[in-house]
Image (cartoon, rainbow, N blue to C red; front, side, top):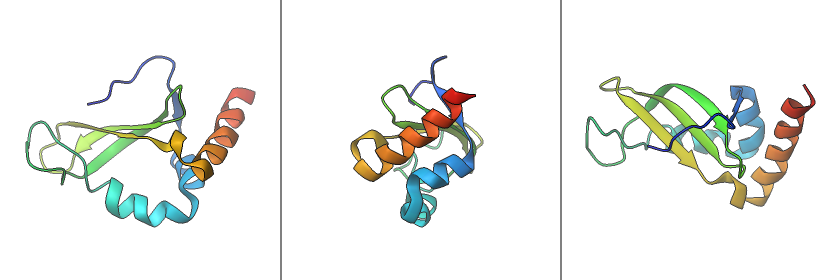
Amino acid sequence: MAKRNKNDLKIAQEDLKKIYGRDWEFFQKKILNNCYCGNCKGPYNATITDYEIFLKKLNDILLSGKCKTCGGPVGRYLETSEVFVYAEAIEKVRSKYEAN
C-alpha cells in the first residue's frame, strides 16, 4: 500500500470531483471497486470505503481507507499528474488550499 507522509495535502471529496470532472462516474465505478486488499488477497476487486483523499507532492492522488469486505487497510495510488486535464484541475485545488 502506498504510504502517506506529512507533506501530503488532505483534500475533500468535492475537490476530487472537480479533478475528475467528466470522468467522475468512471472513478466511482472502476477505481473505487478495483483495489487490492492484502487481507483478502484476491485479484484487484476489493472496494475501498471510508477513505481519505491526499494530494501527493507530484500531484498524484492517494486514497487511504478500508476494505469493504474485511475492514482491513486499503490504499489506492492514482497517477493523475500525467493526465493534462487532471493536472490543470489539481493545480487549482492545490492553490485553493495553499491560499488558506
